[in-house]
Amino acid sequence: TLAGKTGFQVWPGSRLMVEALTFIEEQQKYADCQRLVDWQQRVAEGARVLELGSGVGVVGTSLAAAGAQVLLTDLKTLVRNSVQPNIQ
Image 1 (cartoon, rainbow, N blue to C red):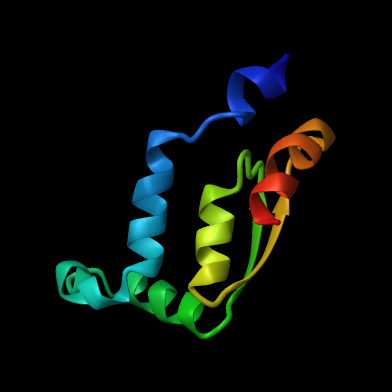
Image 2: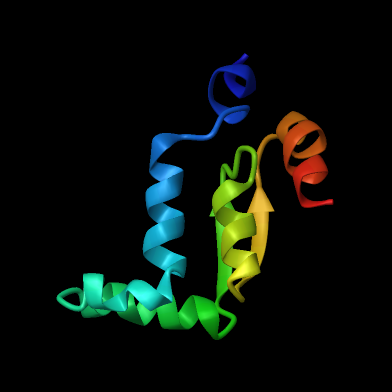
């Protein structure tokens, strides 16, 4: 199924997204990219985030832990068997 092929795994880009959007202490690393620094600050200040196709929920739960208000969405089978258990 589509869910089995794509949803029940952590994609390599997930780590990059989490690091880029939540590691505020590394802002010097991204100092040449003001837009990214702005997003980091928004996340820390409680930005509202909608994650479409959240899979196992790595990015969304990380953003929530960093301060964002996150709504995770995906196929029903993924939400029941992957996202829900991971956030409980």
